Image (cartoon, rainbow, N blue to C red; front, side, top):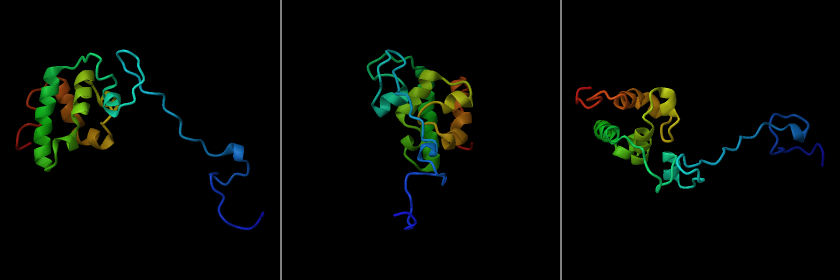
Length: 138
């Protein structure tokens, strides 16, 4: 009954008309393999933006330097290496070889916290700078 009190659920903003409810989250378009175009459902494939079976264009040298750097960072923080970046994230970085923070931030697994903490080192490694973040007294 009207005026009985309680909370009306599902309508934000207190406006009268239900049709003018608060905007909903926009639905993302499905992730598609950048090689064959198939819709990706596996989390690892979505991180790489390609099917596991599709060919990789990964820069092996960048990948190995990123793995070495990650091991040092993990040792410094006393965390497992995957807490710095997972193998799939390192692969995605080595496949796209980002040139700036904007490109790096687009890679799944690189959130703002990791971008702020590791972005400078990762971009330097991608740019081919040697010995980035590997010195113990860094």
